[in-house]
Length: 323
Image 1 (tube, rainbow, N blue to C red):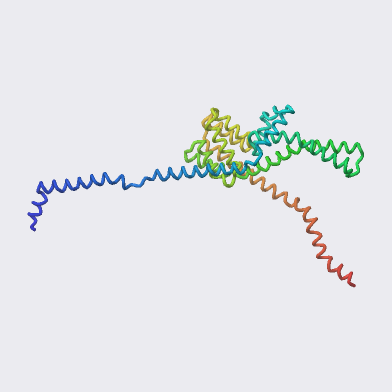
Image 2: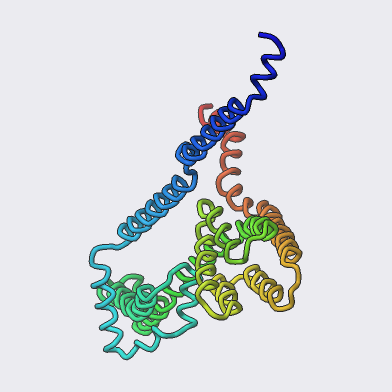
């Protein structure tokens, strides 16, 4: 086939129309079949998110069912009736009492009823126990006046037991939160610099630290809910500080409020708070390390020195006894 025939074949209008028609048909087929060949990446992600949400809901339901003790509701109702007969229901509405229990991690109606009922019942129980011991069993052989003093002391002790329990639980919870607070601030700085809103940053940080710092994650989750539903964002942040009852939380709430009110950079304030919290945590660790020798003095005298004396003087005493 010569070159002239090839050129004539390529320039033939009929051949050009056939080629263009075939190419157009091919493009049409591709245009119709391409959407069916593409994978839908959004649907699997939505299904995965829905499955994860359902899994979390089932875990939360199972956790609540595990914590729901048989007869607990009936016990709370019985205690409420007793408090109603004693005209002590007003104490259940005390905001300071609810906030004190919230700092210990106990929220809701049941902890308040249990605390007030325990503060009423424990003085009677302890006083009756002491009276039985000193009057019936005649323990310690006290004089009658001292027995009455012991019974009154037992009643006073029973009155302070609920407050001591709440104080100890609150202190342990605050110490646990203090350990993880600087790390949470660092994560919050990363979230804010990434462009997340305050609610999204709190929610993200709560998800990240939930495994290692459940108490702080729970408080951040509650604050996120209040920021979304309360009309006053300042009140939500102040509630966060009041629930924790810590200087670190108050400083964070104040910085966030001032940042929203005056438009100051939030990351700068968070970096300063993070550095201060890390320095405070290191200072507490140094204080504990400095107090360690004094704390070890007593155990060393009680447990270490007698062993040293036995090892050093034991052979000599054995030789003297055998000789």
